[in-house]
Image (cartoon, rainbow, N blue to C red; front, side):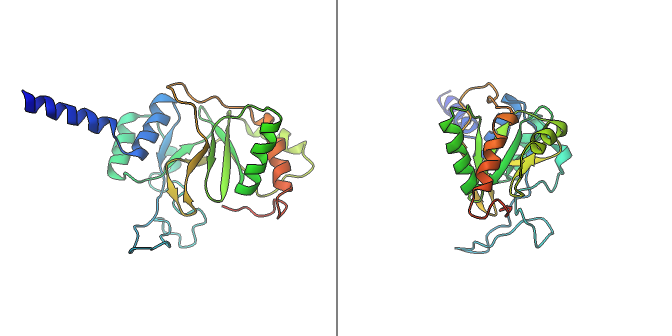
Length: 227
């Protein structure tokens, strides 16, 4: 009986200590009801110190290495626990890709330097923010779902919209922590609050003006995309 109980304790511990990527995907899908799927990922390292890993997709010039859907495609994004467990059991290190729009969050992303400026400006005005995803090159603010019509009206009201801004809406995607992509590790700059409830999200109207202003004020004037 002691051996059986010990075995049960080890099994329970193993379940609690599930791999980080699987855990993140399950949290998104089963607790927050956000549809996710595995990203393309990076090629295995060829040796010690190998930094040029590249994307596993067949495009040798992939501009977002590892950070996009590949197989399966974006339409496969789901909240089904069994499917998610199967995907990440087979590919434990696969990036966690959020299918934006619909019932899931949308996002607005911009180069990292401009992103830091935008967050500082929003903090000074006391604006409440939701989760913020950061990579070494770009930051993305998660916002409540918006329509193309809403977004079009907002952008039309701006004097200038830098091309370095990216809008992740219906039919788009965003890579979430703790994924690793070509530019480096994906992390939370502003992490979701702990708990089973889905993270609170601001409306896009409350942040877009600050993001545009921060991008225009960037050293390159917001003219470089910085994937």
